[in-house]
Length: 199
Image (cartoon, rainbow, N blue to C red; front, side):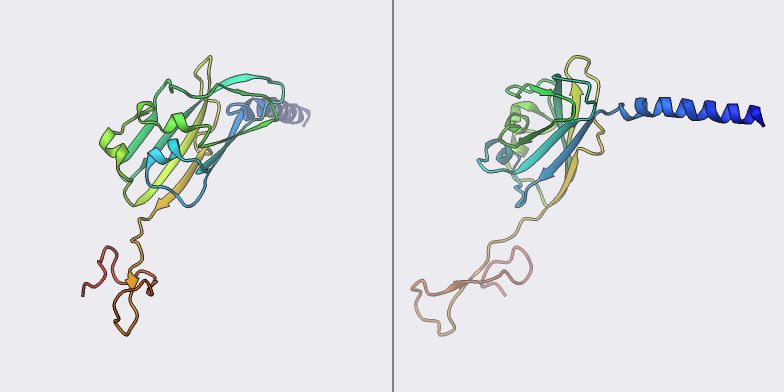
């Protein structure tokens, strides 16, 4: 009986000792949010003057101050696999302190969306809108000195579904009078891509 109790206490002590170690495998929590309406051009994230995405980094180890980190961006979906370059030209230096959340927008992170800092995409693909479908935008945090990943890659992602809408057709008044800017814009109808007036 006493032997079982000692074994039980030893197991509990080891688990309690190992729990903080397991919690610090990924000491940075990443929260990423895309702001609608979503744009279908990657270049818009580098040049937009309004907020298209928000990124929050939280270093959960409160004993650490001014830890220099680096970010890595990956975008995937519809046969597209894009990653930021290992060295992002123009990227801001990021220092995290334990317990303090640091927030960024696409205005701060614009260098990550520039063509010269992206791998896996051609200039032609970069210049054209992304096709309709589901895309995942993911951020990873790395220690700048060791290069070790310090965030959970599954938590720094946001998934968006891009839909390319046709503009609404122009509807004329029923009396078919000559056009004098008296018509109204109506909702699109019929199959997508149909030109107004086609049967």
